Amino acid sequence: MTTFPEHFLWGGAIAANQVEGAFDADHKGLSTADLLPHGILNPHQEKAERTPGIKDLAIDFYHRYPEDIALMAEMGFSCFRLSIAWTRIFPQGDEAEPNEAGLAFYDRIFDELAKYNIQPMVTLSHYEMPYGLVEKFGGWQSREVIALFERYAKTVFTRYADKVKLWLTFNEINMSLHAPFTGVGLPESASEQAIYQAIHYQLVASAKAVQLCHEIVPDGKIGNMLLGAMTYPLTCQPDDVIAAMHENNQWLFFGDVQARGRYPGYMLRYFRDQGIRIDMAPGDLETLAAASVDFISFSYYASACASADPKQKEVGNIVASVSNPYLEKSEWGWQIDPKGLRVILNFLYDRYQKPLFIVENGLGAKDELNAAGEIIDDYRIAYLKAHLIQAREAVLDGVELMGYTSWGPIDLVSNSTAEMSKRYGFIYVDRDDHGEGTLTRKRKKSFYWYQDVIRTHGASLD
Ligand code: BG6
Image (cartoon, rainbow, N blue to C red; front, side, top):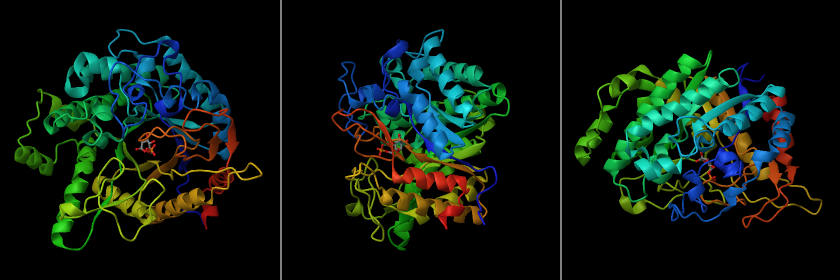
């Protein structure tokens, strides 16, 4: 017997800047993502003199989306998570009127998805903002950006009210602490004071988007999006337990504000201890309190450990953490922990008592074509299968789970390193790290495996 809920949504997730290409087509403006040709781990080119990079064409989803969506439909997707590039709609971020060509592009995408009864889930801002707003206002460090984001959100809610019912505000909103240019348009050298101030404005903007969605989109639901950075104590030594509590609070803080509508006490204490002062205008706290998200969404790739001993800390992918001696690592050093997915699902559900949505999960791995030209990606199947089994366990534990969208159902450009060779897809894209390749799409073994999982509503996992 399958235990996934009857209306559980199955699908995959992508982000505009990692798939679309066409970075300057149809009046699109430059985004912060366009200024990171080597990925967010190598942010040394966050300047106006842009150098070309692999994302400029990415996988050319901008032109090839009908073929790609047909392949998603062939796998049986009922949901497809994508983001709108803010710079296609407001190229510089502060125009009075939106760019019609950009709006029309997403109309075409949503219409294509509707043909196959695939529900879009749209992220308003997935790791990008108009670079024009960085130049003019210094990114989210200015309160003025709130109103400009509201204008953008209102524009897309109004335009797509009948086509898109599921929305997310900011992708992995907690990442600004580690990648400030990507998250809030601040230089990597920005102080904690400046970053938390920008985050405050972004949280207010997120709350305003929640309110707008409720006003404009009939039957719309809007969630937040967290990087699920589940951290265990390295040992049962109480100091390690406290260290893990602090690490977890760093990301839960965002969920607490977005779901509970107020700054948690541990954060106010942190601000006091660090001498951080957040400028709040009258009405900010009311805005936060009035706009709790409808559901909590999160990405989950790995778990981490925390130790009170600073010598234990290693450099991780973007966030430094301590290795778990019981877990294996992916080729990119991410610790694989399927049971951690059950833990985080129970943990978040217990904390917020709101429906959850796993909007990213997957294995970045190198794929080789065999002599017959096939890709036998058993490692990817093993990873996804183990995680889905744990998601099902969490459902059995009583967690309300709305759906699962695996990351990168089609190979795309990696966010952290801008590599093509770090592949997540069920669909292979013929393009290498140097931009060579025909862009031809090819079904991998995992394509048929996922198709079966969806067809049987998870029963084939047994
Ligand atoms: C998440 C992001 O952090 O992880 C995605 O929301 C990203 O944009 C994904 O692609 C996987 O990370 P990477 O660095 O392997 O692309």
